Length: 416
Ligand code: S3P
Image (cartoon, rainbow, N blue to C red; front, side, top):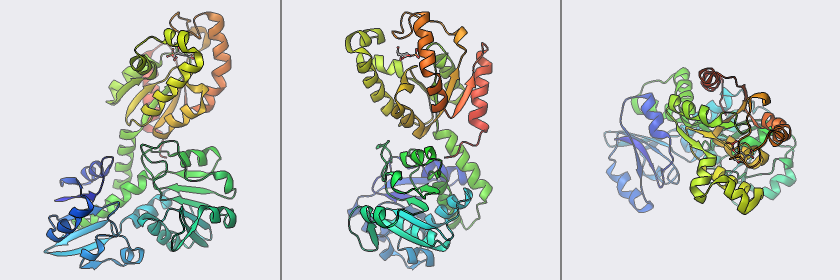
């Protein structure tokens, strides 16, 4: 057996990654802490990955531990050769590869590493190997070898690089960040080990401030590739890692459509979902399903504020989906939290149809006549422009419109 052991593996991408690299079967195996001992003694595997919370706990069962893994004190890959177990740490290579791919320099820099678990130790070893000036692990509680968040803010406001190894902001807790970036005005790069969502709030906040900020998907793929090399004794090239990263990224990213009522978000979205083999979600339809009543009735009973509250709840839940095409209501853009949530797993497209070809309809309470429609257009146009990752000018040919979005989605370098 090849696979991965952990206490919880519900949202692991590892099987999908290994299956794209080589043709061995790769199993995800959840083990409770009391099952670990008998599993490690029985050694029923050819090679395995190990993840939270067992990266340190497996070490006593190993006959040999690589120098990097020993120095870090954490093992994420074990190879079984005739009863002999050797442990490695390929997270080290994975994190190094993520930093190098994005041309982030740690040399001479002050680095803050958020978190105190196994991955924080790996990040410390990577920062040292890249000749940082100083690196500090930051923990919520007073822990050996770590400083607290209050100390970090007081003594290291001048930190230049931040590496997050905590699970804050990770699925299902979107829209949470471990720090307020205002406290660190000198930051020039942020590296987040979180890959689900693809663009965590920390990464999002960093990008908004113009700081280079990257998520952890490439690290995940690169560590898996290095593990696969150990499994089979066969090299995996950087271009293979890039290929798998790109495939996975397209498979996980949502396409989010924003724009005026009547701009064609639903029609385009349905067709696009079919062509991409993705699920289609219309947030207005979700609202109607959830409330068991029509949108005009919700406006009549709860007012616009009541409708917006429900809309935001629906958006929070659909933002966690992956590989979906999500058509939003025209007013979703009015709340910036909606846009940030949708942006955590999605690429946001402004479907920009000219005002002349938009038509007012009775079933849309805020744009049921021409004057209201024009008012909404004026109020919102700048917001659509500022909230999107890509601005698509829409014409009358649906096929052409879909082609434009697909081309942008598939060929643009959309990494996070
Ligand atoms: C609204 C647009 C509608 C719907 C609701 C509010 C708006 O969605 O969410 O009537 O504020 O413009 P469409 O843009 O899909 O018509």
